[in-house]
Image (cartoon, rainbow over all chains, first blue to last red; front, side, top):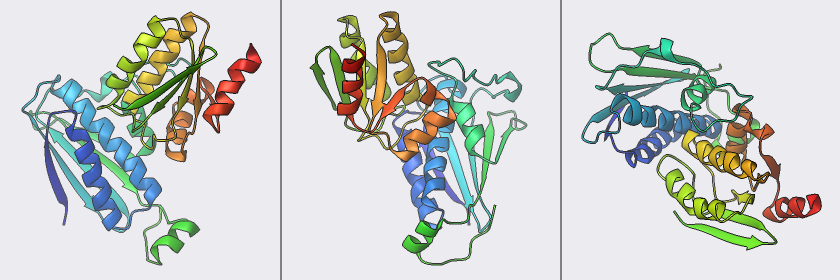
Length: 151
Length: 114
């Protein structure tokens, strides 16, 4: 059963989304290192929605939906703001340190799949997929043994 | 955000008390700007209390770096946890910021250079 959270378009809500996702993933037995990555990715995604899709305007909603099974974690983030055009994305030149532009790069680097859907004529649904890693020996020791999907 | 700042021999050792993210990075910058304006150009950022760093936190680090480079200064990091190290590696900012195990070692590296 997917979990759902609705937050407002305020930057202080981003930490709430991160905490919610971490708790859900931890309860589902996702390895801690992947929880950290998911937390970073949901922060980047929500911050982008607030800054770019809603242009910093308060009073809008962001809907997060999380579906975790044995094989993967699927997170979708839906907004009703200005649609995102993935073709407009230019990856950062990593040889030149810069003060912005790392958010999407981090999402794409840490996730196994990144999809944008703007077909509903109302904002964007970003879907992020992370295949679950087998736990390390240390994680198995800490969490007990359980059957997990491999990457 | 709470942030401890200690200056000694021209080196500012800055220890943020919490994560550097979208919510806190602006305030972190605001704490550092007066030091930069006053001419401090050697910084150690002790990240021992930072377990989460997002692109806004990275932006704050790079902004400081760019400002101090104008005065031929530098920003060096210490107390970096594995999660933060991973983001620095991913963005290749590990090539920009020298990273030391402790703030003392990072501060000493400036003195050796002098």
